[in-house]
Image (cartoon, rainbow, N blue to C red):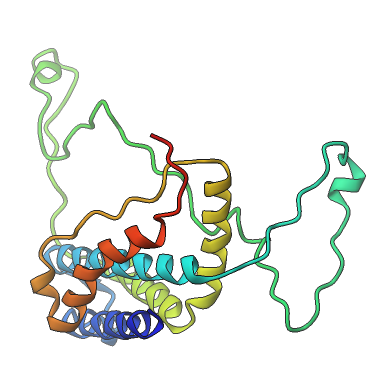
Amino acid sequence: MAAFIEQGLKAAQGAVLDVRAQAGLHLEPDSVSRRVRARVRGRLKVIETIVRRLIILMAAALDLPPLPQASPGQTGAAASAPRPALADTVEDVTDTFGTSYGPVHRLNLTGRRAAGLMDWQDAFAGKGAAQTLVAGPVPAAPLIAHIIALQRLLKDPAPTARRLARHLAQMKARQEPRPVCPPSTGNFRLGAELGSVASALPGLVSRAVADWPDTS
């Protein structure tokens, strides 16, 4: 399994470099066309999904000690007291739990207005006006930042895997639903190496969390 994960991470790293070069982002342009932005976003999203699944496999293979829990009566100053310093060879991975996973994404179930369309009822009532889509190039900085973040993660995924292992252990202890890894489509577009990795990941991740409590 370790060899497969290493192969997958190397293939993902090569794919990120290819995306950067094909879009000319290695030249650090100020802007790119909207078509280039859409293509790069789509490709990075696919690569990020593959990397996330590989890190799940890394996390599932780790055997970490359980996190210490405060006793029911330990509140106030005792609960907020600073923890003792750790040895130089020990990494504290608990301080970043609050920021490791970013804000929660909430679906807008009522839908949103589409930019570039006109609300004719408001227009006829004299309350609205037609809007047009903004054309022209868009800033390249967000795409470059996304690529840099992926490259940093691929360079040293072990700390992220340890944090994820803790997070999965907490989910499992709370009997939350097990992670679902559906099959991906269009793997043939990723090339032979990365495509084969993407095709194998759903089955491997499902087996890695097979001991999850049945919450159905």
